[in-house]
Length: 195
Image (cartoon, rainbow, N blue to C red):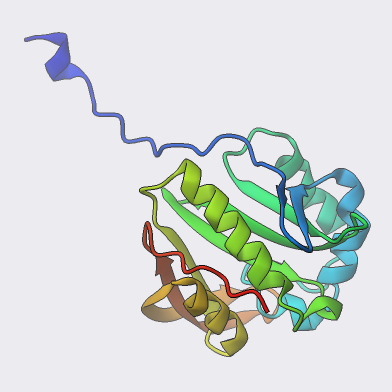
């Protein structure tokens, strides 16, 4: 028997490389820093934000932010968690593409005081466009809670399509919540319309 027959196929997913810094017309998406902890804690101490996130507890404080930032800033994860910042480099949110259970997942949140300005659409489109250049054949999975129609509209405008519904546990709400699963297939990113 040859050694070729004994080798297992490589089933590890391709990796996109280190997270980049991405500039848009109004935003900079950059790797997180430990010094972002106070701004993250301020944003995620707002239940209006955390109630739409599955894995964020409520209440959320500075130590929770540091606990999350330690592995994120270590450079050991394949994920792309990027801080959303304005021209003044103030942390106003997070957009990330992370590897979970062998699939790439999009996640995002924004400080409530920056809602309804188009920032999240701009940030999500920018990270997907850059990720897709590095990983052109890779679908990007995501999802939203059923009571978050604004987030679902954002995803649909960018080309995501619904793939199913179910329930997932929401730590902030301490209960199971209806969840709509979505996916963006390779090459389906819709260009963002500039207002």
